[in-house]
Image (tube, rainbow, N blue to C red; front, side, top):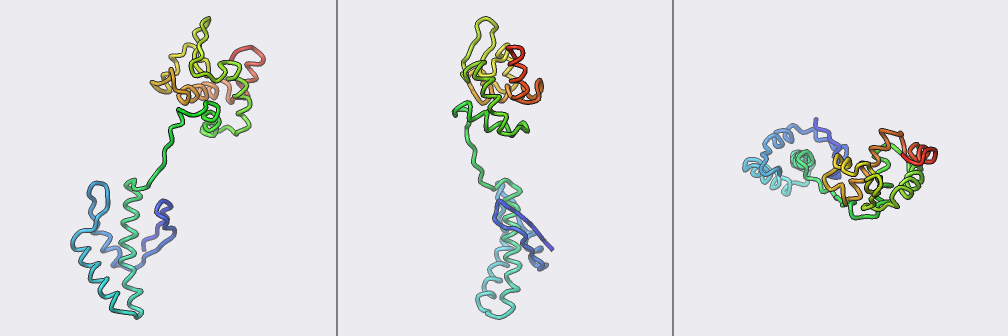
Length: 192
């Protein structure tokens, strides 16, 4: 028995119990990352299709199982091989505040932490990706000291707000546990 739950393909909980489905599915060949049926399988499908069209009886429903099983197997293979369509979005060009707010969950923080982060980085840099402190050489939105520390988050650290924010949130998590912890320290000491 074959049971799947492939969300990306729209099939959930389908079961094909016919042994012929397994036989047909076993003949799937892969080429260029896409599942394709071989000639034997195509002939079997064609003959099954002819029989299916000529019959309106109970056997018609039974003949669908191998074809549906094959379709299912093809969909499963595509799902395993990355055949899904995904959407990516470049957040580096967006508003730094929106970028940071979207990243909070990646660090296990609730959206309630954003007000502390906003206060902290408004004080530190005004959310300016090019903020440069000439007296300390701190740089960027999180005011990394020196700014080149942010290279650990990406080579584009000097001008990419997402890279700077990623580094800054990692620093805050490691050093203070949360943006509100960092803000509290900054309020008490004048720095974080």
